[in-house]
Length: 546
Length: 36
Image 1: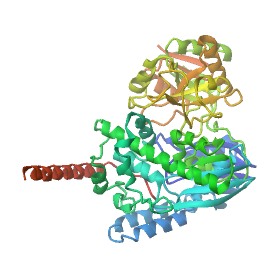
Image 2: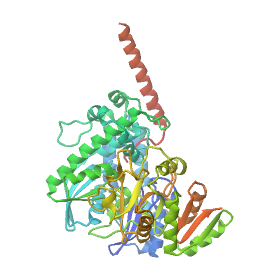
Image 3: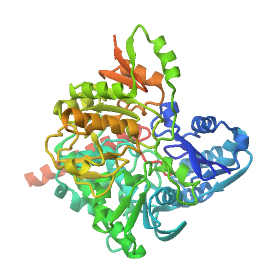
Image 4: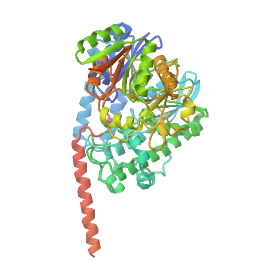
């Protein structure tokens, strides 16, 4: 059976194609439109998936929609009806949006008239996390902003069955609270949360934790947020009001304002609050399910610092490669355990790349090398402090570049971090970079409990001499690489080991500030030419500027 | 008395600043998490 999974109209729109239970292709719409977290109907991603499988939309037997729009609309109306006058225009706007974004209407627009199956928002998260995990029995904890009503769920997975055992409903949302403070700190909600996480180790959490906890009503048995500080229920412009400013005794920061120590302290306090509440939920997951494995899902599962804390109650923790709504496009289709690689996107042949290179012949010089020669040369370049953009095989699905659309550098040189942050990626200097390391060598360098293939856990570094890839608190959001997982990237890391005894590389996504990750070779060459990156590798071609 | 007045002025200034920043943030579209 051919299934098309779709996530759309919220954030991180994506599509995937599943044939007889096997995920053939998947991509996020943003990679084709260049709009970060694009929430439009993923028509480009759908076309890509169909082309990849060489089928037409008429061959699709079932569309699996990642949430239930009718229930979501009911929630929106019910919330707006609390303040009918204040939300009059907003309600009209929402009504129009639900009408225009009706799945049946948009699917008809691309020529699909078949069956549409709607899955609960958090069930899609839970499916994606549990069915891509290696466990036959696990607790599944999903935390995000909001789905239909739910903001947090705990489920028990056993065999192919998932049973929900605990929920927290909107407007009590840990994800929304994190996003609110993210916006308070001058970062864009649903985008800047990882910046807040990166900023947190620079601050003192004791400064604002007491004040921040006042937004929670701790007398309630479930997470309960005092709505008097927030405007989610009646504003689509801002997430908090003056009461929150008075409580924190700190003016909100505008994006262009300087980051002060107070901002760092607030980030640290928020991260501490999140970690405490997250640990409470992890403990509850253990109590309610009695299992030793934990699957995490929802956007909050990108909080790698908190994820690592889950080992306090669980022996093994699985975080899938795209725990946000993008991954839900896949989750909506899955009904049983399936091995899914994150490399589900586009791929370009050497012949296509060569044709393109010829068009740039007055700007670049290229060498076609064998795999072995390419790996050796790239390793030598990296060892000589060069920055290399690395474009190989199929594009990753999810927010992380896992070695196929990456910018690589040696982590030994502290200057690399400044160079990448300030000159190449042009982003905030406080933000850390992640290291990739071969799994077999990882325990020598990092304090990992188990393999971390998708870069979603922040662990302590055991060595002090990887300054470009470790954070101020000596932690790193590490990626462990095996030969099965990514053969060419693994070989490159091994070559680094042969060359300088360190099988570690700084791995950051191939894009600049506010850009989406590079999708195709043309984009790769244009970005390479327009940056300070020293070399570009696309498949077997080593490219340099003239 | 002087301190009391200073406190009131300080509080008023702070409120003004909150107001100004909130107003400015509202203009930055979209500076919120979509809830529908």
